[in-house]
Image 1 (cartoon, rainbow, N blue to C red):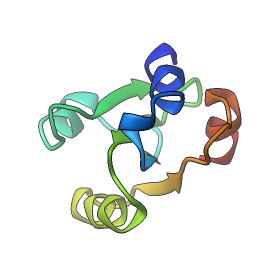
Image 2: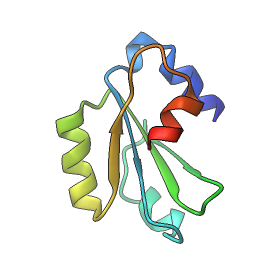
Image 3: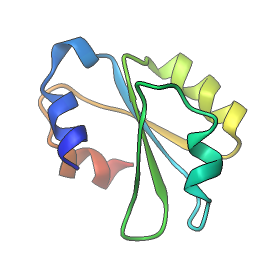
Image 4: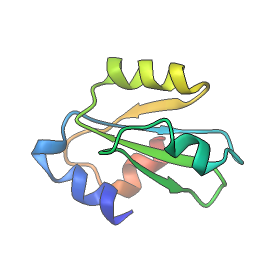
Length: 88
């Protein structure tokens, strides 16, 4: 989660949203559908976390709809990666 924590403290990455998949989604399929600046990580519960720098909630929601069934969470300035992941 080093990437997420560094983006949370970088004003150039804001607005910042994250999205999560259902457990078991294949990372390769998701990675083929995202932008070069986005990040992806597997969470301990089996979900994929999609990190969306420079992406506001409306744009993130549209991306989540296009990718099918992702849950989107907007980051709040000053929170840690752990705090954001607890809300995701």
